[in-house]
Amino acid sequence: MAQDLFQSPDYFNLDELLTEEHLMIRDAVRNYVKQEISPIIESYAQKAEFPQHIVKQLGDLGCFGPTVPAEYGGGGLDYISYGLMMQELERGDSGVRSTASVQGSLVMFPIYEFGSEDQRRKYLPKLASGEWLGCFGLTEPNHGSNPAGMLTNIKDAGDHVILNGAKMWISNAPYAQVAVVWARDEAGDIRGVIVERGMEGFSTPTTHNKWSLRASATGELVFDNVKVPKENILPNVKGLKGPLSCLTKARFGIAWGTIGAAMDCYDTALRYSKERIQFDKPIGAFQLQQKKLAEMITEITKAQLLNWRVAVLMNEGKATPQQVSMAKRNGCEVAANICRDARQMLGGMGITGEYPVMRHMMNLESVITYEGTHDIHLLITGMDITGFNAFK
Image (cartoon, rainbow, N blue to C red):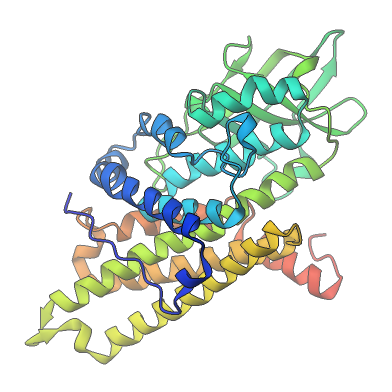
């Protein structure tokens, strides 16, 4: 692995909008990525292995549940801090950011927001420290974009419930000690239950043969008459509002993360364009290459401003799920386009592991789909501005 020479583009001096604390947090995660992720990530991606040792490192760095209050092991930080962390982690690799996003937004957030005090104290500190890894079970084999169709269910059996069903495309599943699972109860309400590794009838088969997120662990969650104590049910939420509010938090992190990937590809392409000589001059001196680079930095800058604004609204408690949805879709689209253009600028070198571009490109094919596909997010915005529901 060549040395990580990344320099962050900041064309509109956005750093002036950040506090000293924000800059310190960002630089700490950026340095971590340069020292611990960049040297190993290509090898893990090529082997399609999850670098399990990073879980503890991410916990030590405070990347798990940074907005959760400190009394439960979180960082008690604001959403700009969280966004910057996700940006820097995904600059290293989307799979690393996914690990942190799932842990913070999809596991710790619902336990904090909807859990009992006992549940908070039992699970959150271990998840925050990285001692435990968690996963989030919503998507099913036959129900992706339409979670309301879920078949996974719980039935009352006295002091416990019996859980049956299956979930698919679950990040962290093969290594997770804890799963926050959404299931329908006998009244038809969607409930959250905390399932622990070792409960009889609970298994997490690994998903193999992925061309994307290869350094991230993906699996299924299978429930065959699993006995779950009633104290593991999240008491303070019913219905799709529960999982959807988690997805809003995760989508916010993705909006920032994808721009990290875009920044890495832009920075790589810019450096390459100054060094690669064709027709007796650097390729960066040619008009078409400058066009690509100029469009990349423009789109990155627009996305950085959008992400900063949505983070300010999150801090003020004013951000709508629809605004977060727009930021997620925009980040994914911008990043995917920038990665593709950067790959072309690098020519044949762009497909090799000597540069991060092709790995980012493949990863983003998952990111543009998970937590709401590109098309679904377009329709969320469409419904918000017209008032008409095009989903049905």
